[in-house]
Amino acid sequence: MSTNTGVSNEDALTLTKDQRKRVRARSWRLLASLAAKQKPMLVLTLVLVVISNAARAAFPLLIAWAIDWGLPQVTSGNVAALGITGGAYVLCAILAGTLLGWYILCTARMSQAMLLDLRLKVFRHTQRLSLEFHENYTSGRIISRQTSDLETLRELLDQGISELVSSGVFVVFTLLSIFLLDWRSGFLVMIAAIPISLLFAWYQHRSEVVYRESRVVSARLIGSFVETMTGIRAVKAFRKEKANDASYGKVAAEFRDNSIRSINLFGVLQPGLVLIGNLAVAAVLAWGGFRILDGTLAVGVLVALLLATKRVFQPVEGIAMFYSSLQAATAALEKVSGLLEEAPSVVEPEKPRPLGDVAGALRFSNAVFGYGDGPVIMDRFDLDIPAGQTIAVVGQTGAGKSTLAKLIARFYDLRSGSLTLDSVPIEQIGNDDLRRHVVMVTQESFLFSGTVSENIALGKPGASIEEIILAARAVGAHEFITALPEGYDTDVNKRGGRVSSGQRQLISFARAFLADPAVLILDEATSSLDIPSERAVQRGLQTLLGNRTALIIAHRLSTVQIADRVLVVHDGKIVEDGSPAELIGSQGRFAALHKAWRESLV
Ligand SMILES: Nc1ncnc2c1ncn2[C@@H]1O[C@H](COP(=O)(O)OP(=O)(O)OP(=O)(O)O)[C@@H](O)[C@H]1O
Image (cartoon, rainbow, N blue to C red):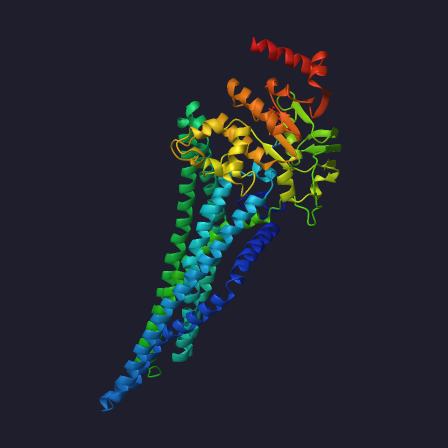
């Protein structure tokens, strides 16, 4: 049975009692941790709410006082009584209004601070999570957590909480005033609490599932949109527009149906509360009327009682609104807290081993690896790479070449066995050291928004423009960069700054050159280059590789020629290992690959 840890079982709509308890506790803990940081503001807001609502709730009492004490005083010539009762009323009105404005301001500040805190927390946490998590959890879902879930929470914090607190306090004070006026009527009004509680219990039970479903469908809707837009080139290339229209339309319709279901539920809750409120007013009026007739109740008190009873039910609608947004926000909190509960699978050591000068010797011993809970990809794998060696890794698709590279960059950890860099187990090396000494250039060669020089400088933060140009020259990127509209200052996301995939790879090379790592991994990094560019890069590569340890994963065998040693990987094992000349001379896989490649060139 799933325990609902982290994001596992995130799409489940109904939870077992234990799962629900766990998930709810996790959600409230998150909310409480956010609120704890706002304690002073929270206390101030509560004080303001209490005083402002006490002033508001005093209005019926003042009216009863004015009718039953003030008016007889005025008729018997004491005009000052009018001033006293009127003055008290105006004072209460000013107090209630001013404090209301103040506490609205306080809640807005508090809720925005809590949201900012949560937004940053979610962003930092998602960035920290390991690659393994991101490969399974789509970016659409993360976007949904960051946008629509947080938006739902914002609605609760911005309007809901202030509505609840002020409504709750107001109801309590107004009820108190009813008891003060006439305790018998107070008990009569209290009877209404029974059907109200039943109605809320019914709503809570029904809406919980509907709102949970709303978060799930909303994530699917955003996910479907994001997938279409990020893959827009493939969508156009495969004419997938119509199919996408249909599948997006289906999810959008599901979202609409879900919204209608939640509105329908609220459509029962709100009129139900209004009905109960009106029945209570009618009961107070009927009973009070009879008591006036037999002389046990004053007219002023009945007027005040009716006013107060009507007012006691006004905020109940507000509370219903709050309850609805609370249910929606709880469903969102369930998801966000689940994401925050995920722990990185690759953890930075608490006390990293200092590295000093790194030569770049790598050693896999008895290494076993598989992705997540999946099958074993590498079984008791041994590999010794002396410092400074240039290794080419070849093998058919899915053989495990990239896996080897990703393990060296520590995107994943081994299941067992060891991988060391200069005899230090890789898990004991701090992230900063690892990023400085092991650099991987991948096929996608991602460019961040900013200028070309900023993108190259990522390899060595704070590098001077001279160093940047030197790196670009070394890998043969300088010529095309200077031909860009603003040279090194060209924004890669602006018109004219758009570079081809081959040029992107050259920029990545320059970035790696500038980083000057001890270990360099090139994963299919020359695949987007045309033959002349590749030749240019071959020269650049020689400079780039220099004396460092290098692992080149290449389909193009031209790159292999510059290697000291070739590894042929098959099914997660090294099946051939030797210099390019040795392997070409043998009758193995590499010799066959090499022959096929030579023939393709002719
Ligand atoms: N993120 C992943 N999750 C699960 N399995 C994966 C993942 N990445 C790769 N694999 C599996 O691991 C095996 C080795 O994949 P790998 O990417 O290392 O192959 P490769 O030799 O680099 O292939 P190619 O030349 O096509 O890039 C394959 O069977 C693949 O299906």
